[in-house]
Length: 235
Image (tube, rainbow, N blue to C red; front, side, top):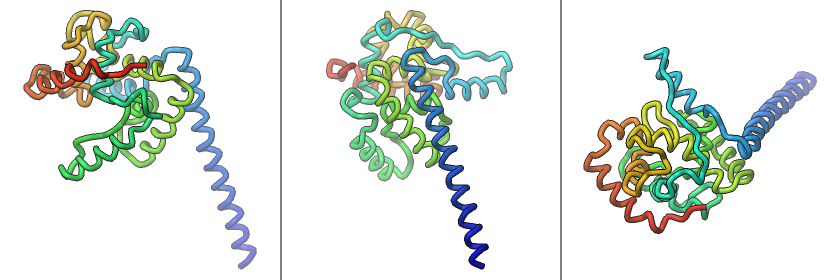
């Protein structure tokens, strides 16, 4: 009996060691990409691949619209609007807005459903670059680890630059340049403050909001973001 228990414990330790090594290797894989993308611009993100796969189930010829634009060629109005709308403590936190998360949890509890997320720009970028949008405890944990990697290896300017170039802004529309051309037929550098504010407020659900870009709700939200633009702090 003791021999059997000893053998089982030995195998159990080997299994745990194997799992630990797999987890370590996976984290090193993520870290490798984070370091590489500090100096080179990402191509297709994981989220883009998922959306493209969904689109090609309906239309095999479907493509996504995206065009990389350097940070200094993106309208300052759009940068301020996105920070004001998505993460007004962006340059102050270390990747996580703990107060914002608490407020989101309380709001969801009162409503009895998920109406607020509390994710920072860094967390959203971590998810978009590598992960599935499916909400599971494992995905949230992995998102947190990648967020720490991004905040450690990149500076805030690089995080915002990659976010603005990779975030979804409509059905098959990714990044600031594609969004500006899709909605306003101009480049992202030419966006005015009102245009930038309207683009920022559709980010929580761009494929839904793009169907009625000038709804009463979006009009109210746009005015609120416009009022907050002067206080939005950029890296």
